[in-house]
Image 1 (cartoon, helix red, strand yellow):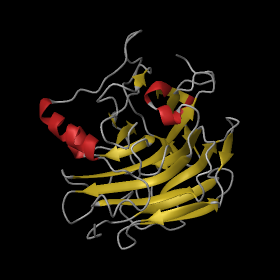
Image 2 (spheres, helix red, strand yellow):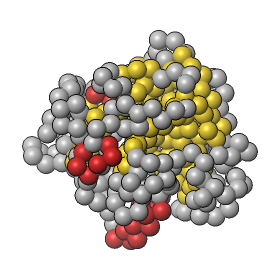
Image 3 (cartoon, one colour):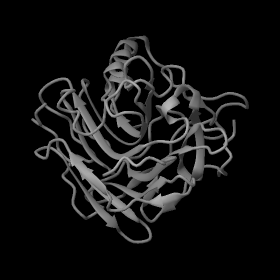
Length: 317
């Protein structure tokens, strides 16, 4: 099921934004015809089932309905549709979370009525999620649902749906490096892209490396296009104190001090990448705890850039 668009082989290379962190099985990976699958210990399965079903509905302004979820995001002011994907470089962070919390940074690609049972959503980026992974490492994380998180979908490949094809990079894999405040910045390049020929939605990382795909058949509202994309971060807690977001600091325009999304793009109705523009707007659910700022074009290395983050704390419901 190779997509119609071209792809390259993963290289451990550096770009002006920062260094790519190594991820996945080293050397050649799995033997031909086999793919890596993250093992789940039996004592994790209960947490996984619970988190998958209670995973945030993630549209803006729904955090008041689903308590203790918080967001700092950027999204188009009009849900005009015609999207066939989205892409960004995301700084890799390791926020401190407890066993009952998680903190993530990701891209959303969605279609269907807002808040309706028919909502289809694909999400991909990094997450620190002890309830799923049984540790506090920063890991390659994705999620999907075809019915607004009711009965379908899950994280990674914890249910049938996502088709893994890469022999060494897999969902749930830990990133070996994360960014250092005012020091070395590590990034991951995340793309969700619909193949024009098959209609499947591909997950692609560093240097156009194809990890796998979500078949269009399991996402009927996304079979032709997406009507909404979103970039940003989300946190969740089961108690009164919310975890940090990004590097745990409020953002500013100094990228060595702020968590960031750079080179943010959407894939338009002609299957061509477009830089996002100021028709996108920001949303922050609790400015006492988090913030986000769209900086616009920051030059040829960074292009369209957003900074985000915050310490968390008593953020309200």
